[in-house]
Length: 400
Image (cartoon, rainbow, N blue to C red; front, top):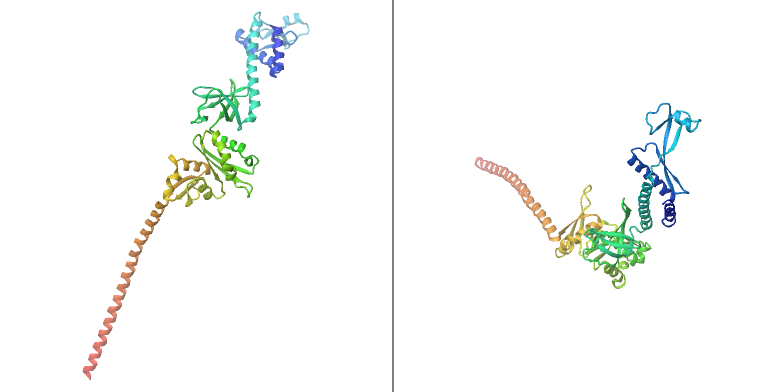
């Protein structure tokens, strides 16, 4: 067994890259725990390994004392002097206490530790190798499927695709070749885990990077992506070169570039809109193909929201089927969008104007009434003056 163990250590170090010292240290620790479990004592126990013979020995370290209180931890000075006359109180003496059946325990423990270290090494190797592919597209082969995952073979490892990352309009059959986005590379106590997706928004971005060289080299930039996988996606693009149209570049000649992406996503509709620094223009573009008359924003301090006014006949187009168009536009722009038809806005304005008109005549009537009363008073005064003048004139005539 000792010879086989040494050969196994050498093989692991050569083929799996697991250092022999790492395995030996792990076995030592496991054997101490096993000794404690079987013999109820491990406070002063050590395990030694002979690298030439491949044997493990259990060593108990005892302290020299005048009077022994616990023979598992202490040895009397009298007994110590029989071993070596140089020992004094306080010295430590190492005794081999290897049980008769310890070879079997050691072999079983070694096997368990080696298997554990192998799993750890494989996990670390997988994580190290595939962490570079995180957030990247990779081609794999469907192996099988259960209620939770689709299992995809990537190289020599098996990745998992959870239900939420599976396209609702796709069926995955064994041996199918599919392109997936690596969303997570990690490990747990049992195994390494690579999680892949076909519904992540970044998958659309990576597909366009492969189809459009201008995106790959940074001339055209994808600013944001809003996606409802299997149905529709909106992407906002901008150009860092004023001579290049970002939308036309992504669409390609006769729509070839965008069509390749659509085909890869099993017919998913893709809207490409131009990003604008002005939020009102960006929101208007995001609601494409609907026409937008005006965009109004909420007051400062409120949640980022916008009121969008569209022609009456464009209302249902702007909202989209089950609100999809406005929902994706909101995700794309980061604004909460409220859409209103033009007639509703005009009705509100007319209603406000009519309220103002109703108030004006009342105010004018009061002024007119007051004015008439003033005129009436003036007329009364003038009438009295005239009558006095006439009376004075008649009196003068009679005297004459």
